[in-house]
Image (cartoon, rainbow, N blue to C red):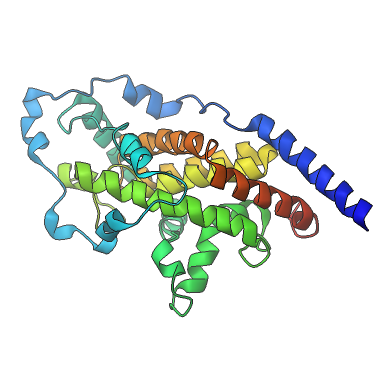
Length: 301
């Protein structure tokens, strides 16, 4: 029995070491309209100076502002500050933003019923650390289900917190940092939503927090990169799902492409801090070991 346990530990260590060869992979390059839009001037255009006076209305703030009081999990306060200062949005009056708004108007004109159904579904996904603190909360189970959305979407219903408690612990820590990062940036910069600048936009829903940076895109890519540390061979699939999620926010008319690209870059920078954090490294090792033991009998092939 002792030899069997030692052999199992050795095998899991080898698997983890192999997985770490993929760790810290560079961020995929800009593509499609994101590359085209970022090539345009991001500086103020005097011809549209009025747009630079528009900020997210204080009357529309929500309770999400309380996340400014929460301590990060894997990040330090200094890292949160540095990361929050590493991104900025183009001037509202810039040629880049005008092109972004035109792009979103074009998406709006081509929205299909099938698209609306899918993006609305994706828009309802969201894990909230505060809900996870109250097991009797009416949304507790759904919240945990949403925590595993990306894994479940790609590999089936058996990918859940009950079957993978170590993976759940890792994702919960990541998502706590994500919410803190999201709202630290949003309430520091107070970017108006696209529909505040372009009256022709008809968003599928309105959001009660500032636009920059996109929270949905941040969690989509941060989870995709985290899952990819657990299952390196599925990185392409996780990144593709994150891409769909970020583009859904543009189809909905609630996020500029620049909101989404900033969040993609930010999530990758967060991962670099994580890979040098002993607590994250420990939790990742445990999640990888759990995955390799439990998943063979549960994962949809």
